[in-house]
Amino acid sequence: MLRPSPFKTVLLTLLAVLALALSFIVVREYRVVERVWFNWHVFWQASDAQAMGLDDYEVVIEARTIEGLEDNVSALSFDPDRNTLFTVTNKDPELVELNLEGRILRRIPLTGFGDAEAVEYISPGIYVISDEHSQRLIKVQVDDDTRFLDAADAEQLTLGINAGGNSGFEGLAYDNKGKRLFVAKERKPVQILEVRGFPNPDDSTPSTLEVTSSKQRDAGLFVRDLSSLQFDEISGHLLALSDESRQILELDTTGRPVGNVSLSKGSMRLGKSVPQAEGIAMGADGTLYLVSEPNLFYSFKKH
Image (tube, rainbow, N blue to C red; front, side, top):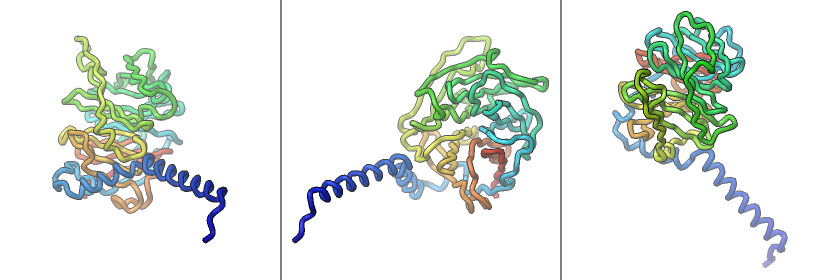
């Protein structure tokens, strides 16, 4: 029997090690183990666990161009007082108000906000905008007469958790009852933080700042990145949007994934896959709104 030469033996060993290393990277990068566990759990869970019923949504407005914006649309938040939506752009940064059809109502230039990536409604006239690169949270006040916003005039909070690069704060969501601000870290690692005490719900009294995270919740996030968050006050569940995984993931009150829906062609009657989902918001009637780079607008309703 012919034996392989020492050179071939070494080469085959190196190829085997390389194959194992690549397999490990793929499993880790694509969160394969977490995804398999999620699918197994959803298969056995009670049908009412998915409180938000993501599978019942169908697209109503698909990939409508937001006229007047060329690119870099990022984040989305619903304002129940104005019955409108707010988004931000991170190139020549602006806070942009949209109607529920995805048409621009006004544009507010932002000065000193760095890489603005998320905006979240807190209370009447109060919003938080995130600066991804420096990991700042900036509280702003907006009314009918607001023509520009300067970060130098605003209350700010810098967290600096694994700061730097384009892997910072990509999404925000607010729990009005619990007075919690959820902050999504995009990647390296994918993480959801909870901030209490900012913004201060009562300016007349000092607040205690508390920043927490859940390793168990973060470990169950099988998506490759986080682009945006949405908190549902009725169920207490959190929606997590992933651009790279093309998923909307539903997390229950313990942070456990209990439902998901794809943003790929065919799902929710989409004619084409959502190219780069960047922001999600929920209206007062349960309608889901979504924006995608470069400047596309979507809405989904339950059928």
